[in-house]
Image (tube, rainbow, N blue to C red; front, side):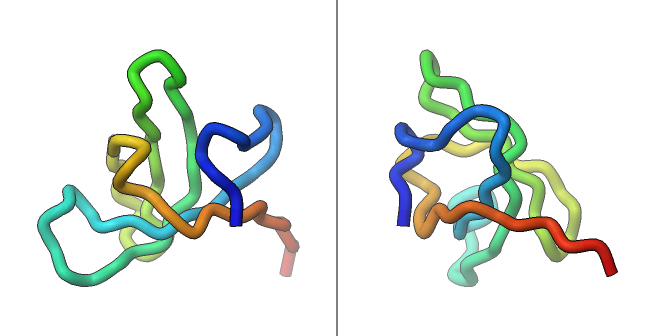
Length: 70
């Protein structure tokens, strides 16, 4: 797995996170944007399509995504 600091702009990544840090269930999302200065990540939840803005520390299991058309 990758660290958020090591992801490469222009590539697609997914990660696990807890929506708003409040639930006990982990979610999976696509990383849309990373703000290095503020150490924030904008994520689109793969299940609900909701957008979340989370601190670096609140995302884990980051891996590159390969898009496949069906």
